[in-house]
Image (tube, rainbow over all chains, first blue to last red):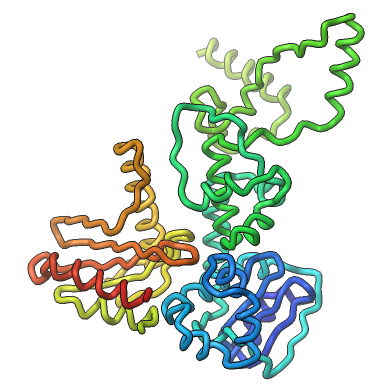
Length: 283
Length: 125
């Protein structure tokens, strides 16, 4: 089965108009080969963004969708044209970021179908893919591990330093985090784009402001068993944190690996070292 | 009422404007571009401008403790021209940044700032 991006490129080439439904993951709306709107189940759409910021309640939006559409929304003056375009732009790019890599469902194309918020801004398929790739690369550059993207956000209970600067999204993430919500849950709750929350969480991680990932549950019973054995007073033993677990900004953290990763067997390395030493002695 | 494209046209009508761009500060993406100079990758320059602003905000936050930093506009003058950045707080993400590069000789900074203020209020109200 063709991946979503090749399918979309094909529809763009044929100047198709309609809606491409990608299972439950989302829908892409096209008009004459250009993307006009994109919905993704994981990210907040324009309606959610407008409602979360207290601009237009969702019920009012639903009423507008059935009667009057965009023109009436602008006429009523709750959002300006510039704001609506900016909002659609942000929401579509955010949906594209999460929807384009989706695979495993058979997309269904319905010709002629349009979204009521479409037509505010036009996107070409290649541009959407390029921007998604750029965002992905930037996330990886901020903090290399994607494990945070799906795990509950748990800010560190204490500040590991004397001061810190937070940007607005980071602030909202710290306030909203309840040790259960994942970044995308938070995005929907806060009415922020999924990407901006992912980025904020990775920046928090890079600054060492997230609690370390939860230890596997095996360790705890063993520790208590030992404490019992020692007949003891149950005080936890102090253990030196291994160097690898320090946040990267910590001067004592092990730096990023320089050069290509070591793949050889350590015994080979020892042999090579001995050979090098022998050659040096010879000369 | 201005759309994003019209906003850019208005910015380019500022006397001495060489090129202009709208940048989404959250994602570092170029939203709209007007005639970038030869050999300039708009995507790269948008991302780089975002980093400049982030660094400025960070630096100011550390140099004025006890304040919440909110940059309204930023001016950088180089030996070739003026670079004006205006940040627009929107209700959604953002801020949305209007960037304009002005000719050193032919532009009037006070006028340019005034016009940018007028354009941003038209865009958002």
